[in-house]
Image (cartoon, rainbow, N blue to C red; front, side, top):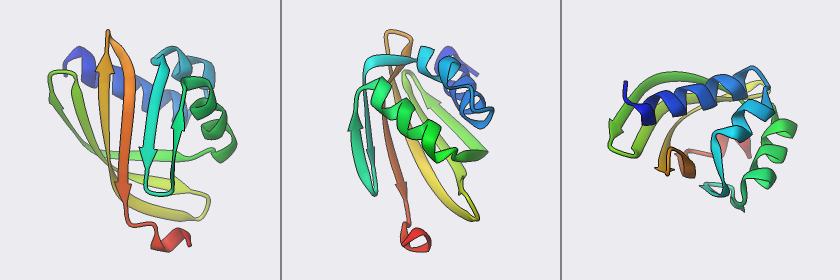
Length: 108
């Protein structure tokens, strides 16, 4: 795995362990999140939301192409599990953006 893939794996491990400080340290300050149910601008806002949600990840596959990393995974939100895809883009060695796609119907 390259630096980009390792950074994403470390980030997901930190989130799964609810270690928000370690997860935040892997994000650029201007981190941008775009998802099916909304978007967030800024690493601090995103980490605050993730801390409240306590979402967990089961990673199935990580694909890398330079500073782009794609993760196929299950998002576990309480008693709901949804399969989806996360596209991370690194900027200067840290996670600069994340775009997530999944079918939200089980959550609605």
